[in-house]
Amino acid sequence: MAGKDIASGPTLRKGRRPKQQEPEPRDKYFSRAVSKALEALEVLNGSDGPMGLNEIAQRIQLSKTSAFRLLRTLESIGYLASSGWGQYSLAPGTSSVVSTQFLARLLGVGVPRIQELSRELHETASLAALFENRVEVIAVVESSQAIRMSNVVGLIVPPNASSLGKVITAFQSGDRREKLLRSYGMWRFTAQTVADRNELDREFDRIRTQEFAVDREETVAHGVCFGVPIYGQSNEVSAAISASLPKGRVRDAAHEKAIIAALEATASQISAELRRGSRQAPQAPIAMAAAADGQPGARRMRGRSKT
Image (tube, rainbow, N blue to C red; front, top):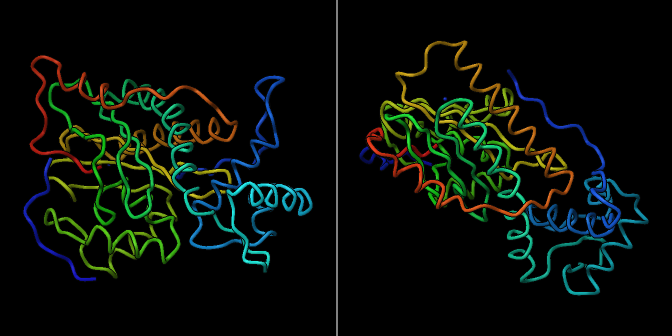
């Protein structure tokens, strides 16, 4: 895919994947069967096509017998469709239900964590999620510093340039990665933007190995962003968090490592809470971002960071 030159876009330890653990019931009313059914729907929602019984059972950590009973139940009430060859997929209309349920959980768990992260780093923290053909920012907590990098809820981030876009795209299957790149396009925002497909594939390999992504003035001049993945129950990546700051505030390599370590710790906490089936009520990220914008005397870096 050829790169496209455009003007500068509007508006930086290796992570450890969470251990596989069974979610612990929060109280006596917790239903393991319901929890596993939701896990199965989420796994199928994130797949590139129909999945077999064995794979689903392994992903949701059930025996084949228990998984078959669960899948047949979901099929009988209209949430799943079966090919007759032991292959299951979401029934029409189910995908939007699953996505909404996952996003509600992600926001409920993630927003308080990125608030803490922003306070710790004194920089802008963002949360993004994977949708059908895009990576989109779903929550932002802006830095309280007068000069800061900014982000916007609802922004679709470039999969070839932003730290959030790159780190989520890198962990998708080849077909899904291609779909994300074709849907957005490989635009060149600055002289540092990677717009060559071979070079980008090498960048994705590095991201999967080191388990974080860096945007060094690739989306906006004088801005640096670091992004790390949020691993799901089966180590799939459907979300990520980032920290964004002006290039002049990045002191040295040790400072970069400290930022990445803080991001990894936060992402690990979010992953663990999602696996426990946390049902905290989602907060209002748009209002939160607007409140940060309204601080007197605050100055943004020119343009917005597509972190």
